[in-house]
Image (tube, rainbow, N blue to C red; front, side, top):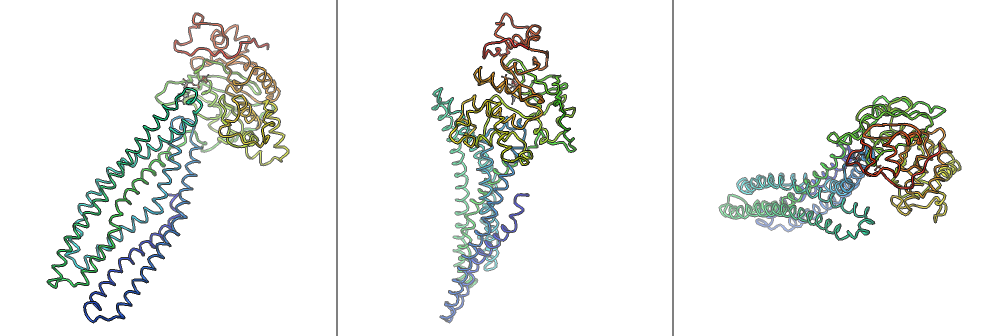
Length: 604
Ligand SMILES: Nc1ncnc2c1ncn2[C@@H]1O[C@H](COP(=O)(O)OP(=O)(O)OP(=O)(O)O)[C@@H](O)[C@H]1O
């Protein structure tokens, strides 16, 4: 495992220190044996007793030092492994396609990157070493006991048979509950995440109590599982305490009889039981260590479930260089594009053919749920087509590196996500890093200013710290329309070749939308733009309009022409057409056309 490799030397050194400490503890009974058989039972030599006592003291000090060494050696690499695993997991999460994040809940991913890896680290710095050392101590101790008295040793070791059998049963039971507990902890984290995310909705609908009930139910489930774990562990601990004690009691009776009949020396008997006492702790800890190992195993399994998911959208092995930006703008072509969200799901796009000429602004219009957002996301490869191809200046977007593609294509979504960073940093996120590195501070400021002006986002200058104001998690300290304008500024700041906008002005009042539209039209000369439009005021941004219907583009043309000739377009974009005027191509279960904003004829 590549994450553990750098830690191996220190973990091995720490393990050796722990082992040495345990073996020193096992040496003490042998000193006792010498004292009992020597000075105590024979000549009463006082200096021999003092020497033995000093030896025991020295062994104790050395043991304490070795225990300290173990902690010092293992703590650092343990936290390093945890940090590296966590960072690699996050890197991988960023690399995984949107489709992966559609399926996995945030709470589960959070739990995998935090709680699960914490369990793995605890096991590495404590469980692993202690397990190896305890097992070795038990084996060496058993060897010493057999050497001291074979008969007594065998009696004691007879207890190992039921312990091993119980250990297997414990492993089977515990690994199931350990996994369940980790999954339930993930569900619990998801519940918190969803509730915090949707706190406005919960409050507005007075559903706080319901959310609390759901959370309490999940918390109860987790508690039950933790209790199952504790019960399984206590059964194992009970067996590990009771069975050796029982065999020891039998060995004690037998040992006294053997000593009385002079078949074993008193010193050997003392050493035997002192060794058993030293082994007591390692034996009893085996249950807890095994549980810890199984917990870490569940955490590791969950970690690898994410890490082993191959990114479906990846760079090609032999990428094609991004062609230089053509003077008049880039050409975007969708040829026979098909797409389904999953192998079992119906196709959303069923052979879309569409060409955006260089520098053209094309509006995409269709019923809600018709696949407009899906189509947009195929251009920057947030999803990959399942059939056909999307081409940028003649190159299939799958033949470009994602870095090149995303430096050429910029996106703004209807529901904009901003990051808890300053306004400036949020806007600059739209500019490729290498371009930023070449720019002076003044140039960067000018870029941000221009993008904010075009997006009519001058309001950010009135925020308490102006462009340096941190706009909070997801930009929630701003209004919906303000967020959209900052996100739009982010999308246009990098002066992309291709701009993909998913109804980016939906939260704006008509006057502001008109201003932003005018600004965009001025700035977007030379940028090829595909914009989802739900209302005619957004269509005003476009040179041509494409109508998406039944997974295909059924019409491309100017707004006025389409309005006159394309019944489905008219139905989607205007308030005309109640149920009676629905064209036949609209499925019965199709959503109602959106009627946000008054329809206005666009003069072209
Ligand atoms: N992640 C997903 N997994 C499965 N199906 C999805 C997913 N995202 C969208 N869909 C489905 O794909 C279809 C098209 O969705 P899409 O968001 O592209 O529609 P849209 O035309 O943009 O709708 P709207 O105008 O309401 O934004 C819908 O039926 C939707 O339920």
